[in-house]
Image (cartoon, rainbow, N blue to C red):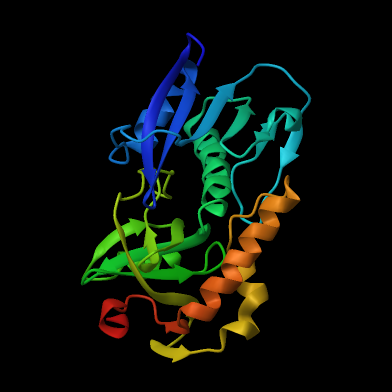
Length: 259
């Protein structure tokens, strides 16, 4: 660790890891990770290193999700068995959040997890995850729920543990400028939102929805091995958890239908 770097241990969906970052981005990091820090009392933790650089060859890092554009020097994205190094060109909170999302995606792919383009609620101790394209109603569904705790309005971590599938909030920027909720709970199911004149649930055959679900995964295109791992985890998730179409009428309390 360099003299201008700082160090923080974060709990991401039950996985502790070390984040080392430049002091120039300490403000956004502290803002985004509030509540997610954990004591570093385990050896051999995975390391994520985030640095800000002022020059370099600019290459756009794209994803399947509409995130702020990050300009990366791809030669400086280094993934090994025990760490990922990523260099970014801006210290704005939006870019730092998008960079962290890339790091989280890589980390989760190594620990049977996914970063989903979704919103989430915990109701009566169980997590419910709502998926839709941008503008599809993810925020509206959770904001109108009269029960439960909101995990995040745009990104959710889902991971298979020894006790089954769990989901939780992530330390990333929400649509209203806050950060996620550090809560991790058993995952009850996935709900694909479809705007409707009447709210109703219909269980669906997940195998028929692979393309739609794949479009709601944060899947960096810069490393093929990460993409393969992510798709394998998605297929496992779909076969082990119920998937529903949620026909949703704006303003309805979704907690009355899911719990």
